[in-house]
Length: 231
Image 1 (tube, rainbow, N blue to C red):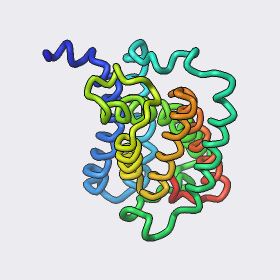
Image 2: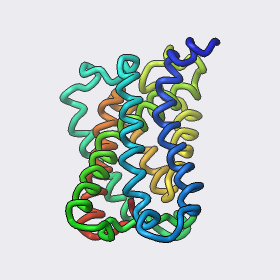
Image 3: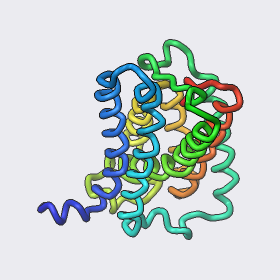
């Protein structure tokens, strides 16, 4: 496969937004300790997060025509209530599964109240909520539920029907989804519920809605309770 073909392949278009997001996280971990103590280091998260979300959004826009699984006709009215319910259930489980043994490492806790002025605080909160509820669910569901879940079944993943069940793909994708998160057990549980929703609806948009509801409720909870460790 030559470079031009690779860039246009269904796998590449579904992997690259997720990969870009993860590379930003890696770059953050490498660069942040090198920044001298001061305002920039204290607010490095507020600087990097909008750039990260804009970059991933740009990639989603560039490859939007290849995401046929996101077409409006893939979402039916009967999918909406299950999606909303699963999203809410995962949120409730998430905030109650932050046990020590179920936490991977020590999360970097950023409190945006240290930003200079309320305008900066509200701007960051708006971007953070929008990124978590609108952008992250799209690229993660395209990657995990559309690509990984099917790729485990067959490398020719586009030939695998959305929502096809196998125990191997179900278990492996749920475990991998959990490993992506600091709260690994909550992540695995979320992966299980989102997978079950996909099997029920055979709809990636339904999973995007559920994931978005979870992240939106979590964001509101974080802001209202100042539980920044969940962000």
